[in-house]
Image (cartoon, rainbow, N blue to C red):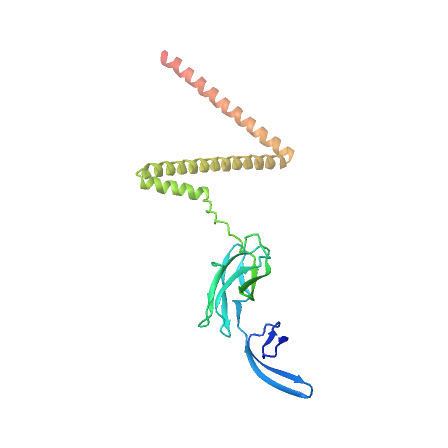
Amino acid sequence: MTLRSASSSGTVILDVTDGVAENVPVTITATIGSLSHSASASFGFTDFTASASPVPLVIQAGQSATSTITIASVNGFSGNVSLSVSNTTKLDIDLNQSSVVLSTAAPTILPVTITVPADTAPGSYVESLNATGGPITSSATLIVQVTAPEPSNPPPSSPQKAPSACLLCSVLQAVETGWGLLVTSILVGFALGWATLALGARVRRSEAHRIKHLQSHDNRGTNRLPRWLRRARSSQRTRGREDRWSRQEKRSDFGAANSIHQGH
């Protein structure tokens, strides 16, 4: 506070530059030669304040949130207060109204909507809301903490049914629609036929393997006999064939003779 001028009539003009919003006691002293007189006075300065809450305001990228601006009168200030935003960041700030009428009765509360674009990088962003009423200006600091968006989850894929399960579903559906008996009979017949063919093939393979094994065993057993024993067996078989042939010849001769005798 500085003294601008003083007149002999007692008018004093003071300049206030520090913006103190309170009652300030002032002592004015007038001196002429060795005479000095003082006078005391109290000056009241009107003002208003602006503040934001919460601080910081946490918003996810691509989302919006609301901050509350409070404008309060100091030392009886009243009147129209205009509002503006510095707009130094890419945040979208909607004041909802450009001015308010401030009274001494109660503070004015103003909601402010802040939208964060989806491509905003996570971090802290600062904006200033400026309130101006006549020669008085007050500012509220908006601090916005931007967080990364949550990753989007893809829709769950439907599980694929196994072929056997699909076949079973088809059979059950056929049963429900009246074709169940026919489908079931075809499937059972197919299964039984396949089982019969498989069993027959297995029996034939087993029998062929057994015969092959016996032949191999017999050949191995015969080849292991001494030469003289093999010759003896061969001679016995030859004599046996000759004996059978001789008996057959005798029976033939006897039958012929018997026929001639009966003829006489």
